[in-house]
Length: 303
Length: 303
Image: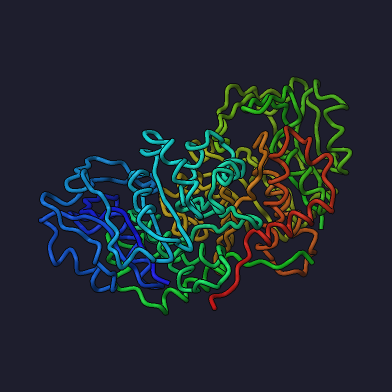
């Protein structure tokens, strides 16, 4: 099944203790699309400015991401400047220039309105809802969000969640949105608002999935080199939804395998800046790391 | 096999957002002993003051912990006063009164010098080494430590680690001790100093085990009620070593099952204050939670 994604395409300037990326291709929709493209056809709805070159576009084209919904508007592309300390879990934003993203109204091309899987990457929840209004009977809708929208538009966000099957958030956001410190209870609260599944992203600590069945937990993959965590959450979402889309419309919602695939994609994402690692990633490497995740987490019953 | 433990027996006053325990039985050796007692015979070397009553002693006696090495000295029992916020991962120490613990010199009773498994709970690394000097040819030696000793006695600690098979530390301590932010590399560095195995405790985020074989990772058990995290690390160590001791001298060092058993014991420990939960814990509950850990973490290979 194809996946429709709406979100940001950006030029990022990122500094970590291990290097720097200047004006490199980034944005939630970018990282999602490239990650998901390893699994399923991806259709991208986003906006860039007149400064967005063919070279910027190339990684998306190389990964066969359909750019039929990528609008070029007068002005500059969204820019984010951020930095990470040795604790790579938390980004510090130094500068944000919205550019053309400030007046972005996503338009889903007519031919894409029946796309069965929809990912609403982290943007204004009202725009996320706008996109849902434009699609017809999607089989699976997933959404991400962030602390900024939880603070500024909690009601719009809650209205959106009522229309969403899967919500992906980090643990701090889950606690912030619900006001409940305990993740089990907080996830249960959110599921009461609509989503049948809450996927709690915990960075290097892995992921927790709460759904109809019993909870699933996967630790993070212990990497000996993490250069830049930017995009990890979106790469996770790309793998998660990409896997589910690849299984087809009749398959059960196998959230466990999907969460492992998401974690595999995220673990590669952080090994280099921007899209460098995913650009040279192979299917064989993906399968090998999936198997290593099993090796990492497997244990026998008590004797 | 029996386990010899040396560490603190204390009276704790603990406040969390969910309640308070006043002058309740605590201390690293206490929590370790009670947890390990579900798996193997435990011999405790520690000191208490004249204010330590039969009522204080009762939970240890009830769990068949051998108190032949518990010395009563003139003065007061070690007291710790601490508090936790909603982020239950980090304790804030409000007061410490060493009492008789300030001049504690552990003496291993003659009859215990051949104990095959030794756990050096978190005390001065020079005292931990003293205990090792007093035992003969132990089959398995494990040690815990804390930031205080890493700061104040790093050289004594490193000398101790050269004599230890398994070291258990939390992730911040591993980073602090080595000066290496990456846990994979930091654990490798520590293994170079002597221990064949490094067990990284991550609180609610679970545990990572680095040894000769490939790494093992287990997420924390998602509990819907955590009342007091005090003693979780020691309960983990008790389950970890208790399981290995129960397997006997000829068994392979099955760190994976041991880490799960440790996590099971720690997950019960935090459900109530002091020893309340472990006091009423059953073998059936332990086995059931072990199985739920498998259910929590199991996933199938890729199709």
